[in-house]
Image 1 (cartoon, rainbow, N blue to C red):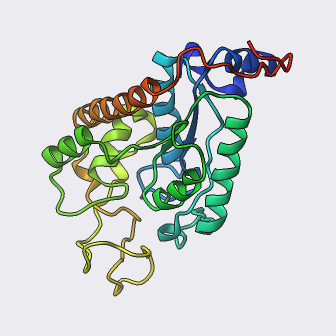
Image 2 (image 1 turned 90 degrees about the vertical axis):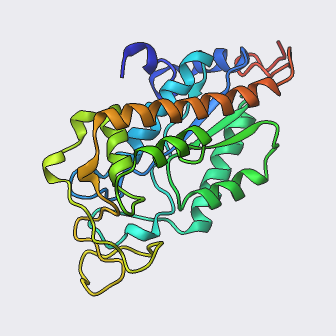
Length: 263
């Protein structure tokens, strides 16, 4: 990530610079992406975090948004059998997201974009944000936009998927190819039920058995597919962000966190 992009991450800034940008009307982005969640043999545990932060940087750049530290622990119950994977309870995760989001808005940010790379996290995040001002917050679900869905349907050659699969691996080949080891990519067997529950690497008789932890066929992934998926995803995110920004009142007064006055 380049130096300029890094200037939107508040952890790289001094507190008074963050204060000046908030007072100037900055939107905030809160990325959600696991740092300890298995992604097969070929992707690192922090795959979701990598995606969350790189996508947040792309979204932040044209609007000068401030990016808060990524929420790296979340509700990921399907993967806990695999070493290193962790999961909070849904209620704990919901409370964490709500408290962080409330703090960001209380600090004076005009609006908040919660960029969510998960699937099991979607419902708890929705509940957390439902208690906040709907005009100030937006839940960005990276896999649900119409452009991404069309691209995924057109590109996918796998018979099933949803985790560390052809699509996610292709996206990682576009975002962070140095973190992908295609030599270790391994397809999962066709599961005996359409939607998997908790995946297992130990019980080969389970309907949710996956030795590697992948659900789908990552061996079909390519960087070319990833570039198409990334462009579609960013198109969806840009459209969603523009819709929220258009609803923000012009010239809205905000508290200056430095002087405690209104500008």
